[in-house]
Image (cartoon, rainbow, N blue to C red; front, side, top):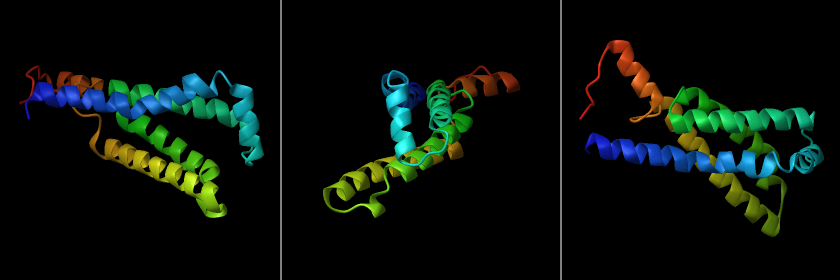
Length: 147
């Protein structure tokens, strides 16, 4: 596949992958901070306001890191940690029955897929058209675009 096509698809993929996390932080958690903290407290999360601040930081820093491809492995690790904790506390289908169990199992599986994407990013980096790639090229003095 030609480099420009790979680069475009990779950037688009990073943006699409992280849109859900940015929207969760900017469109829900920040504007509804106290309501979200109350829900977190209800499900047993200790120090919910402090944990919510941490979650927001993980979501924003992790998303921007992956989207820009700057220290994307670190950003994907932040998002993976967020996903593991959110999935455990909020999508515990194994403790439910009926329609609630079915709905939470779907959310659990969605998060499992996102965790897989984070593991792929941790293993392979951000790919072409990323700040990591630009910095790596500069470090070795290479300016030629790979084919």
